Structure formats: structure tokens, C-alpha cells
Length: 314
Image 1 (spheres, rainbow, N blue to C red):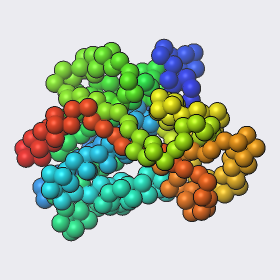
Image 2 (tube, rainbow, N blue to C red):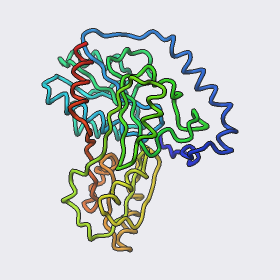
Image 3 (spheres, rainbow, N blue to C red):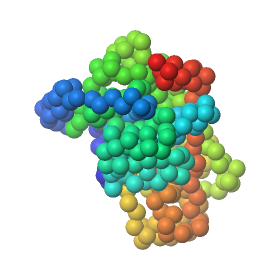
Image 4 (cartoon, rainbow, N blue to C red):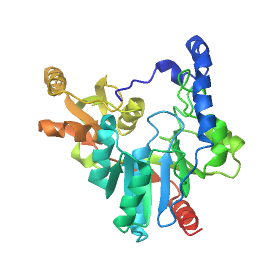
């Protein structure tokens, strides 16, 4: 999917376009209604964790999946990450392959069977919250505090895959922020599920020492939330002069990267992209492009570890 999110999705109040598209949200509501009646398969031989979202794109599912994987490895669990195979989303597959033990298939129940054969105790799915054929043991919903729920409407009038009422059926929320005040967002989440756990997260740049902050930079990305990428850089004192945005999961052509490098040379700028984008362009073997390696940090890691252990042993 090479998808650019419509700007009106993230308006704090619905626009005229949103209201015009509102009747079409009935199709999403109808689909979500019938999904309730799908029979779920519970596999007693392995635990299944889902890291998903109800806001379409850019909520940090993949780095959150990696963080949970690392925590469970420290607890000595046999664990793999997993993602349903989509040709258009191979970038996230590559990233998970680089950072974790990874399983993929076109069917999530087949992934569980593969995990059992490999002797895994736990599979962490990156995405799949709306797949009602699996009975997950733990279901996490990821939000970005800035975009949060956008205009609050369902697709296509807004960015939501499900209504906020769906939070009643999920176990916990990851709320990603960059020094934002999240009081308002947490209150709204608790309004729909007063018992839901909320874990606040933030990004930390792991390879900051690889960059000279006296340089000026051109950045490019094809991710769900490019605004957040730029904000992280600026918060870490990067001088971002130019920005080029592609659609989410964009499959780059070599000449497009060459054009970016030519522009950088002309303006005497250094080139930076995301790790998720870098794994896609690494095949071109350009040696003058660097990527930012981000790790998702949990503000209260002990609370999350205790929560995971309790849910796994239930």
C-alpha cells in the first residue's frame, strides 16, 4: 500500500469533506459488526500477543513489537515476532527480520502453527487487531499522542478503523509521545474503558553519535507518520532544511534516490532517512545515506513487565 493520509483526517474537528464522506463509514461499521460473529480459534499450545491500532498508520506498532520482544527475551521466554505477509508491506518484514526472530505467512493461524513447530512459547503479532479469526491472549492498541484519533471519524471520513467504543474489549494501550502533555488523551481512553492499562512510550535515538549536529540535513521517508519523524530530529537539535515525503510503505526507485542525493549535493546537505526506509533502499548500495535508529522506550517498564507476566501466566 503506497498510501498518503488525507490531511483532513487529522483536523481536530471534522471538515466538510469528512461530513460528505460520513455516509460511507457505514460500510466500515457494518463490517466491524459482522466480524463480531466470526468464530475465533484459540490455540492452547502457544500464547498470542497482538500489537495493533484503531488509527490507520503511524502509531508505532512495529517498534512497539520489537520492544515487547526484547522484554520477553530478557525474561527467558521462547518468543518470535510475526506479521501477516503483504507484498506492499515488506519494509516492516525486513525491519522485524533484522531486529528479532521473525515468522511470516499469508495466514495468522499458520504463523501460530509454525511457532509451535519451532518450539516458541509466545508469538507477538505486528498488526492484526481486526483479525477476529484469532483469539489473542493479550491485545494492545497503539496511539500517537499528537495525531491520536484525528478527527474521530471512521474511514474514509477519518482515520479510524474502529470506533473508540472498541477500547472496551482490549487489554492495554501504548500511548507514544514526544514530551507532549497526554492528560487529555488518557482521560478520553479511560472514558471508554476505565480499567484499561495505559503505557506511555517515547522514541530514543540510539545512533545519535553517528551524526554531526553542525551539519544541515535533507530528510526523506515513506512512513505512516512523517511529521513525527521530523519532530524527533528537531527535538534532538538536527537542522532539517529540506523534507521529502512519500506514501506509506513506498517502494523506491533507484533514480528517485539519485535525485535526492543530487539535491543534497547541490544544497550541501547530508541525507537522513528512517530505518524502515533504509532497509528498502539498502539494495542500491548508496554509502552517503544514513538512517536514524530509534528504540521505543517504556516510561514505566517494570509496570509493563509485571502486566505481561500476569497476562501470560493467566
